[in-house]
Image (cartoon, rainbow over all chains, first blue to last red; front, top):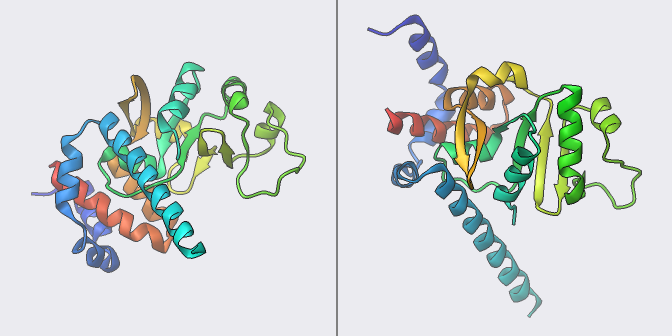
Length: 65
Length: 158
């Protein structure tokens, strides 16, 4: 038995575009993240930013050659 | 790279009343997506504006994407006259928002927030349901994929 609030929330969730995207979400990454503390999630985000920046720099360097 | 830890520490050490929203809030809640800026909703009281102006002064906030040399002065009057500011600082990009679509002001969002601990400091962060609602209200195509991930996080959290 669902409450009125839950029913409204579920109806609002049913956007066909969102549903289509949901199929491609890597749930294993989410599970890994949910095992971490919030602090660890931010440390990971900053490492990822650094990695993205390193990749960009390497790309720029390669294009100059 | 954005130093989220240092930005949050500066805000909390200066007793700024704020709530983490946007991509950083999604990270706090378990998102695996990469975000580059810190978005916060700040309380629009005179005292809090004074605190945020003073807190950010040492990291030289400037309008992100604006050409250098504009007559932009980071002071209480500037913040009082404006509402939402997309800034670049020496610690990275920072968006300070007086209000957000679908969520409103700090006072409206405060009951929809949770306390999280980051780098030894306690901060308020928008809760998952409210973040989904805000993303939905924003109505931007790029947010649809974010909503999908947030809904998956909700499914996994149950």
